[in-house]
Image (cartoon, rainbow, N blue to C red):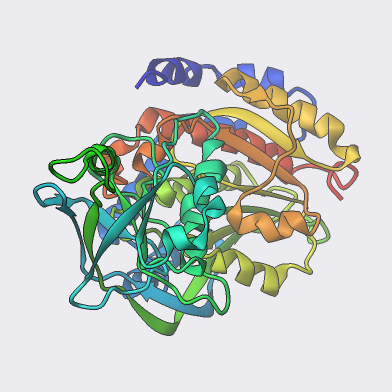
Length: 469
């Protein structure tokens, strides 16, 4: 990976250089020195979680086992006030998944996976004509008569970006494409995976249907299989009935079998731990990740890595001495299927004062930019933080921080936020696929994340009330 060598060189910078960059800040650089010496704490958390628990789909037995594991591990690490905060949520689980192109060419199987909240085809499956749309916008603009009774296919080819900005645009095909197709009377929908890889690994993810809209079967094809479908569709369009130049083109047909189930209300939960601050009157800092994952891989980059990063940083700050502010760690449950953990945290704690919120949920590759959404009183604090992370190759951004999914409700309610933006160039190669496994994490880049988070967290945890009320 192209960033490994550069990241490794950046991590050889001395704690003295960091201390000079953050001169005048309240925290001692000891926390960063500890992070430099304890190189593998973040990796240790990720490795153990993915090895001992593995996939952790929300509100399943696996996620419950992960919460038990998390409580034990956080207690063993010396954190205080460790607890589960449970909640209930509607729960969907996948079943059989098969798809084939069956006409007008020789039948071919496709690599397919159901989207969360997909309806079932029934045990016998369905067969229908495929209608092609180049994008979500094209589907949205199409007349209902073009869609009714057919299997919709959305072909939206996502390109990699460092900041992952394409996800919002292309993701609409998954987020709301099935809802639009259902409203127009489609039999089912398949989409090109929201991903940037060329592997035969379909990308799952949640979709949602409006109240009153009957869900339809909804699935994603791997990118190579989507390519194959497009080639067949184009050839079918070019074909005319034998013996003539007129007539309609051939139709492309698909068989689809999806048998997911809705289990009704089941239990999920958040796991919370704290590093108690020395000043009970000072508002706490909240740092978040999500404990659940999709079921296709082991949830290494999404989001065991985030939990390893934030927890290792909090541990190093704690080891350096008691900070002024309490650091609250949120390992949120049920993020993947609707941010139920973040919503539950806000319902339980949203009226409490939080000094600032941060989240790690974009893989394990290096942090390259820091963005702020802070009060005017924190201008000098933002300057110190920018200087503190510069030795690790992190630049200051020009856009306001937006937080993350699990702290989104807090930020929307006015809690200040800081984003430590990670390099997302290869994130959507792995996102929500069977390839989300431990071997895809580069320990050197993961360590850079921990170092940057430690530097930032040490300064924030000792900030004054004048800086962060």
